[in-house]
Image (cartoon, rainbow, N blue to C red; front, side):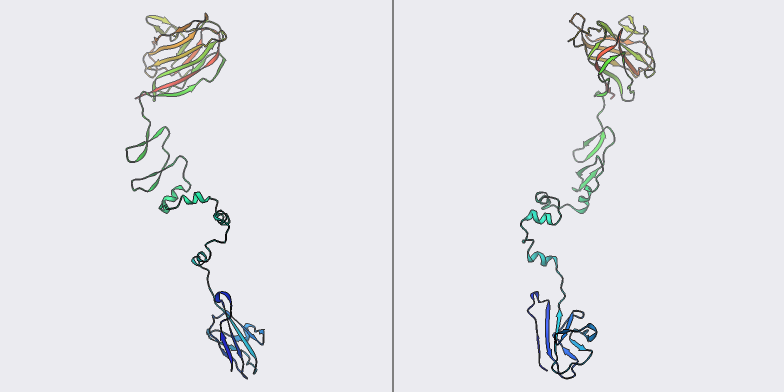
Length: 337
């Protein structure tokens, strides 16, 4: 029989055609090769159903019913292939896109090209990159002894980050003598008095109280400061305080404060010492104030003491008569060593 064996002009060589003219009773046709399952057979231009032929050995196609002399057969086989990443990159390397930002957008990447370029030359391991995954609140990243990225968990309350010259760690804040803010009265307005009960013998033994522009509602009245040993439930207003050898009824301030408009009121520092000791609690007055005459008074570092053998754990500020019209009082603790 006459026949033609060749490759059809199909792009990428994914299709081959074998053409035959049958002899009388011919059933078997030898092709140039095929992949089983990837074959179409046409007789006289009509595509045969898969049940009408057998194509399993990769070479021969066998008809279920013999051909008649002169019948034409065309056997079309397809070559299976896979698109590989390397092949796609070599083909166009995304060069068919308008520009790099378009490529990034089409790929669904939300980072900018500049941000992605920061990874150029990065040598971090997967474990190091994973340190960023769900990092806990307060944690920090640092270089450990192996030179790798590691995570340091948050330190405890009031601890500070320290270094031994090589590695980082958390440590208690330096103690001894440092001044620490404790509380504020807030803006006082026509208040009968104000008390501080935030004494803490485990941390402080000495305290500073800072009045800021404190003025009385009544002109020219004395500021009194009383001690409490029961957390502020009661205050000692008896003659249990001493100024030199003189018994007085509060820690000594000497501050008879004027209240005229434009006066600055009472300012400065009132010191309390040895509050946590079950012995005398002493005070030093470093305050200044505007007198009713418009002149200024100054405590001059005058000391006094509460001469009762008990711990002082609350302090109350009040004027000898009338209310506190305005001002603020701050409380600080001097940390124990």
